[in-house]
Picture (cartoon, rainbow, N blue to C red):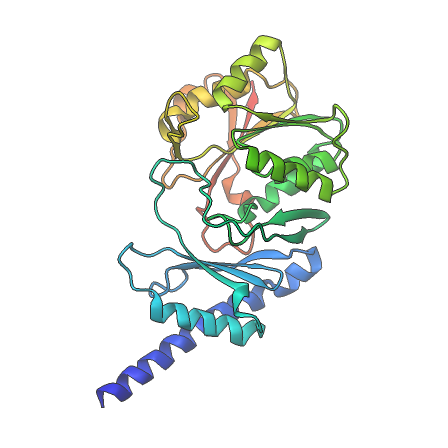
Length: 325
């Protein structure tokens, strides 16, 4: 009898996760086809017993385990695997990648997990992006900033665009295709090279002075740029929550250090009605220092309008539009 009950419980759990993923996919499937989104989030911890995040990249899937460190995922992983197989008819089991997302320990944000160098090319509207679903914890593209990429693309015409902590520079691709001149700043050669691959994929020439890729810490870059008298019309800054990389002189904590970071960005921002710093933060519970900052700048919280429709978690990030008064 106990074995029968366990079998029934397993069947119920399998059905539960299958139904939820299927329901989520049904809601967004038509929109993904209409907008040519080949990368979408299809599940985000909807059911407490299944603390997963699942993203679909063409016919590949990345499943991040988000429960407690001592959580036994083995049986639930099988149910998730079965659900994805049944819904999407996946013939190759290697197209489903499981990863464990733990709290960052303060080392480099984008630690390499493997060295397969396997990549996929996905479409997001008119943009093309190179992603890697195996070698890193993240894939090279933050899906939650899809709406901001569209906004920056529309604002880009004849603008100068600065991308700080540029990662793989997907935001800069959007800006460049909109007609902007871009500067991309990151500390990682891996991601600066990946950024240039993304530019090439989109037919954006790199043999001109229109686009530059700078290996530098952001605080040092801001200081040097100010000393040179550089300035920009649009700035995007999406810093890590915390970093104490050996390549940096000091550790960085976004809650403690965001006001000085924003001041540094604003010192390079040109005045104008359409010019702005878009400051993003992924730290849970982040509180912008509105009292001190709004004395100097006009600050608009645009978080609510910046979260994509395929994200049930409406607190995936915070996003602020900051302008000179």
